[in-house]
Image (tube, rainbow, N blue to C red; front, side):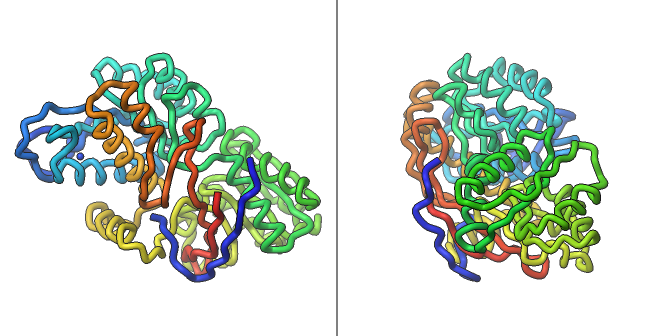
Length: 399
């Protein structure tokens, strides 16, 4: 990855975090594995229904990510349908199947959607199922865009595969550069899940970039998926002299590790990737101090003063009674990119849609976005700092 052009410090300044034909208004039908969303208003046009498939973990250990991402996409498609749909009035039918966070389930669900004549796929959400599905989609030249699959290999399966989020290596390198150039760190430590591609990918990129920048990796500790006690590893880190500790995982695990880090005397500044988004919800107010001052990179900031971002946040809150996570914002952007591409293609021809996605030039909730030759986004990264349990925008990193 190329060096970033600049890290633009903007402390406490806002930055961008950020259309199923029927006569029924704003309805959602749910079965054990399927969720179908229809527009809140019906179009007067009589165009045929266009099926966009969705895959997400709606149950299981990572359901929180699948649910919020699905909600973001549902909101976007409802808005598009209410505004007349696509291709001159056709309504979008968004059919979401629950893959439970499992790669085999995801492939089975993809095959079911494919048999239903979907024209494009929005998904999957986490990296392993997304990679498994990308291989299937490539064999059928199915237009596919994942809002949140960050593993580096996902877009390598074919030119039909795109993503809205930045990659795991990008996150690791970004945070290493931030540690060195902004925090002035010379000694860094890492604790990561060695059995998880997301955690491992960020950690490895961080360590590689740290070494390239002249920082010493004084501790490199691992753990497994089911581990809940990290005190031994954290004690080693506390004694290593590390000034920065990278914890690249999802927020539930991060809350646990951060709490134990404070308990054993770790004084290093904590940092991580986009999996940190939501960490405050995994802590009660009395425990916010365990992540106080921590930094993580993310796709957008809810503190943005951009009218588009604030309208999205208000609409999401009104619909789902909660603040939208980065996963919701990314899926919202992915839905609009897909709809815009189908309109630009002027048909549901798969190759025409793929070509239109590749030519995307879009101002979204998560920032301005184009795609490179690999189907990966070229976009700005936000650096978030934890302050009293709130996510404050510290600055931005340009691609």
